[in-house]
Image (cartoon, rainbow, N blue to C red; front, side):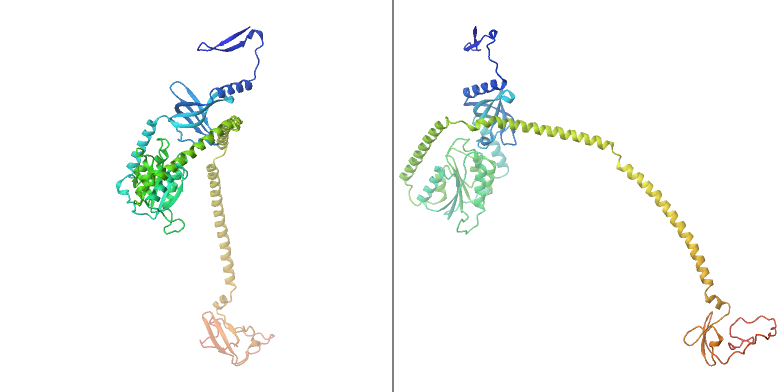
Length: 498
């Protein structure tokens, strides 16, 4: 037996096998997940969802993960790297947007999500509020002051134009300049819509200002025109970005803004030196009138652009039809890319946990180490005690050897011949200052020098001393105190040495 599967709205989706028969097929988790994935992707291949961005996260791979929520539900979303760089707006938490894409599932976590292909702000109200807040901030800095405005040259020799090289805007400006007064034009091609457009427009303005004057190849323009065709507020948003407004305000070259139609107003209009309601009107402001505009040329140009646009649209439609029959290689690797981001996040978390564990181990090991201050203090005390002992040993050594030195000096002094001179003796030297220590060396008439304790005196030898006979015993001399003065007789007169 079998029974129908009832839905909440009362409909039935088919018959399920009776579980009592045991014929219900057994599916693996992967098989069931893949079947559910195919069903969701085929049923919701194109959806537009409005909600508030929450939990925005940009992975290292460049993919963007977020959640769209309202008061009752939350829908996970992912925007792949190639698409994220082409979004018309930069998503932020709390921003209410309309996301366009398809639903899919992520089997690794048993959840469904939207793969975002395009994104826009939900209504002009949010954009207008953001635009007004930015206008007030820049006006408070004085970027829109009238005294900053510069006069336009009456007949510029060179005109620099910042716009898209493929749109109708550049053609309109060139045609109007040619009809009114042909001038030399330098085009700086830029994107005028999308994420990269603001940076390119600002770089073009600053680049023209950096040109050298009187350069024949690329002379510095006398006038700048920043132009774009009409469009919605979102289409013109690049010219409301702060980087573009500041570049226009800083330009030393007079600048005309011609963005959108007459009713369109962007922030660059406030910072420029003159605002033109249209790009064509900007060309009319740039040069004086020479001839009337040739309407037929503009009409043919418009028809040509329309024809080219129609042909391109038809080719694009045919290409899209042919591409549906080809397998979408990008979808084949989407799950792998998301799984890689998941693993990368887990790896980052595991590294943080491991680092904290190692820090804890390091702190425990550091607590067991002896404090360097205590070791240094103990070694300092030991060094102080050793120094004191060395000082005491040195003093004892110096005292002992000083006494020995004094004793040796006294002994040396006692051996000096000068001590003998002090006792009344005299030192005799010949004419060559040689010591005379024998009477045999003396000869009559010989000049000698007598060195006494208090000085020296010259003398001459007058004769030889009488010879002494060993066998004769001289009579004992009378006992009286002899005069200790060397060379003198008892009567005080100078005697001879012999």
